[in-house]
Image 1 (spheres, rainbow, N blue to C red):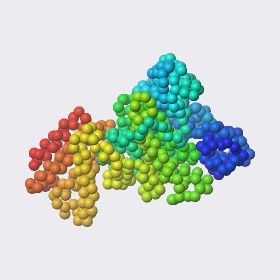
Image 2: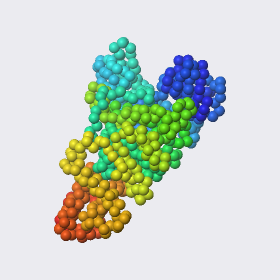
Image 3: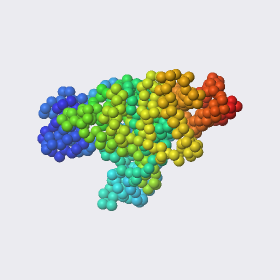
Image 4: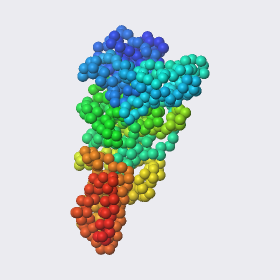
Length: 573
């Protein structure tokens, strides 16, 4: 035995990734290597006090999650044990060997059947619906492991718990399969889909630096690397609160206990800005802090993404936020070291790249299984915590190889209280081509051109700043001085947002377009004025700067005020 790794001898018929129970307390573990009758077990709880000769019990099934009504609003640990149940049983500290069902077996759900006896069904077909929360309809589907069959019997409309049979399906082989409101699915196996589609819809977050410059698609993958204190958790909280997703899965993977405590206390208090209902009604939280067993940390991201795939299969848009995948990779490294595997770069296992890719590949825009051709989205955004902010380290590099959006957080911006602290010169999105038509339709016809012009201004500013440091701003031409002022407006009045002011915390795509269009109009008209002999200071008076800075506080229905700013510039000209 070495830490979370236990070696058991004399065990026959053990299978890879099979769940086992160890010792008299029956603590939970998972088979991760089989050598003859020697079995290497990754243990999800503390192993102190376990010694040679203690029994090991095979369960015959892989580590799985229970999927059904009751997932939303719940807070789980890394292996899907509800923290509220664990607290009720054992107090503030989780004791070893404690067990709890993921879904409340006693609670009744009102089931509305949508199929009839005698109908042919296949995997993914919707048998009925359950109103899980005030705004969320939970679709009860034929489980993916049941390929096809005929409904022998289906329950009448009424109240049932997650363990009661609501349908019996006869397979072509003649066997009868009972279907409950819930079913189990192994966390390491991706749930099947009918087809993967090309992402073409933006996941709107209301964050101007993201939506305008570095957008992510529904069904896309993103990476948020940054050093300590740069705002990774802030960005993910904003995405959880404001993104136009139906379901949010937040996985706290190896984060500090105080951060997770703040999160667990804050989320139940948050209101969904679109509906006014509690945000938890469309959220699942998975909490695995840095002092919890390292093996459960490794499993937590798979638990989260399997739950995300389940809601995706219903035809919903799901966002999974993993904070942070660096801690997950560290768990892989620790377990690999216990197994005495050959280390790769910086001690991480050689398979770090393939594991990272396999995780992010489970995201996507898909045509779901079923007869109604519904489409679902699973967007995955992983935070990465590179030691010392070194983006060349293995976890960041392996993540960048497989994700298409890179939001580079900058501690210098965070220390200036510029949030979101995403560095516009280092970040990128590879979904720009996919989303051109979307932005023209939802934002404005020339939205893509405005974005290019604004980014060119920010890049030009970086060049001019080098000159300013050497000889001062007065040495620049009036055109360049004016461009520096416009770039400052873009940085401070467009990219900077205040999360504590609701009207500024979220900006619709249409308002983002109008704000950017107004700034570019001021630039172009101001450049013409300078050619006619005006100075930069004459054009951008303190009064006009103040009006521009207040654009982000203008309500959606009052955006016609932006046109008045362009008129003021025309009068100056």
